[in-house]
Length: 287
Image (tube, rainbow, N blue to C red; front, side, top):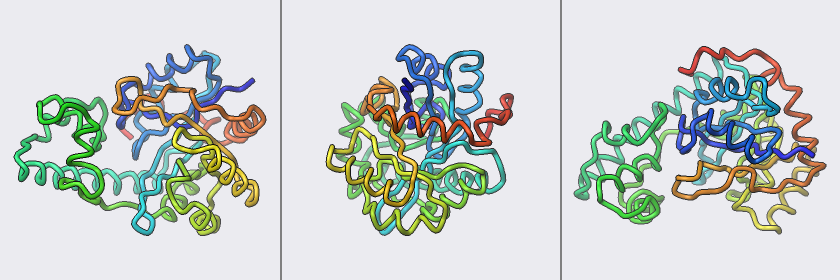
């Protein structure tokens, strides 16, 4: 039986396990397929593929793109992607948006008496991407708050005094960038948004699937999302969205159960993608 987890983050974005550690954890938990889906970067894919080489574990090259949709944040997962200009351009825009946002967040924190230099924040990261969880961890390390949850609740979440909205892609642009990179775009943690309307809008832009099985989804939401995906002939996926054991919200890898028949179908569909079959540039971790 296939046990899969199609939504994982590593230290290349805001996870706490390195790509190689993620592979070892997946093997320890008896998974047969995982997807590395770091936020707005492909840097974790090559080291994960190297770590899995010759082992009974298939690693799917992936990414998670953060987008904005009608005042809501919508995330698009891209599976089986091939490195190329379209996705690189999108990732560059996202990276610049994050950089500008981080500087603005730090400026707002400074105005509130919380002084953090970018270099201090970078000390808690192991990848190229700095995110709000990294700022939260730096705040804990500096003694301004007792936990990352407190940092978000008091300062960093939407509506809090240091929250800054960043420049982002639209879901339509993200779908197109993933499709142009020969990947499959899938709406992540779909129940967090007006998913029925969004799915209908994104069908014209190449939407391929819906993440039905996610730790934040209730049983009723899973059933609604599954019905919606089946109605439109979309791939049904799922994953733990694990950021590692030492993250602010630890979720165990492989802890989200996907019905065996659907797991088999998702694994079969992803295994045929060009980005899975091709030889990735394993010596290049700068993407």
